[in-house]
Image (cartoon, rainbow, N blue to C red; front, side, top):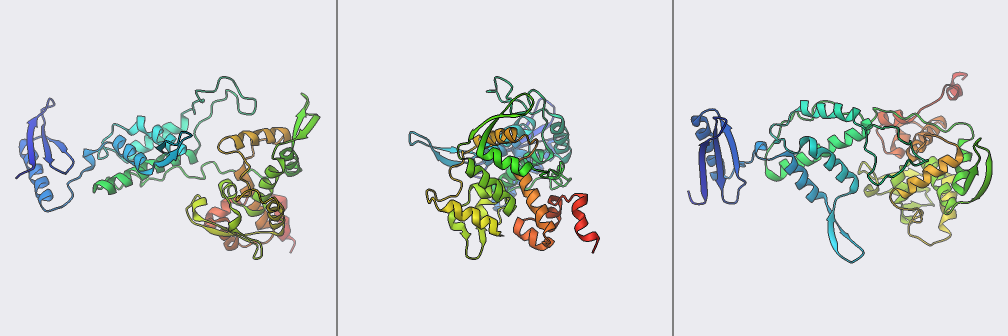
Length: 380
């Protein structure tokens, strides 16, 4: 048939390698123990191609090819300072793709099995996270030279990225791969359940450190203080996290148009939500007071546009915690704290899960109630 070339040859391993080629279709080759089997496979491929059926096979592609095509698919145009437009992948997803490539890149997709995924997960659990190449000295705000390993939730993101890449590639090329590949339970997002709550006067100390740079001597005694740049903005950010139980990105990206102060409601668009599902968050009187106070300046279309972008905000947060003498607390811990407070105020599971944007079962993981807080109901 015109435009078709097929062939069978004996390779160095003694097997018969059948190679299917047809114009406009991907080249596919496969090895068989006998020439008869190789010819039968070629006949099947020709019949599929002639009838318009998909001839693609997961054996014809490597995981590396799938990762590369997926990266090209999700890349977005970015304009640099010179006005040049380049396609770039989100740095976080790019890190997952680069991390997967050395382990799976040369595997054919058809060869990949669930046991390979499981082995990768076990390896990642004990693999130290490399220090950045640009790190020249130990930073006093971080854990120094103490080795860190990947968290369960981070490993899950690596696996999810691999699945997303294979799903996209299989759909794009018209083949199916082993449906058992991701059937096993992946590392649970709650493998390291955070139970950090604010204690004592920690909230007051954090808000004070948001507003002021505090110097201390070797004993921790305050020796001097001066106003922190954008200090009130950082303080308001923390206060809103505690009032709304929202995620960092949801507040950081919020625009004034999302707030309805008359109805005391905040409509978060799906583009700003990790789960891709928008929701309405009720605004407490305190939250409305914070936001209306910030709205008076009218300088930006976003309440927190003045916060630094990228990692800079986390560096400042480390300094705030150091000045406040508060250890091991992050922005997401305020979400746990807020949900726990909502529960103690009598909110139902359904109401809180709606406002927080979680299933009831997941929301319950966020509510960490202390023993003495449970006394509110035991005495009737």
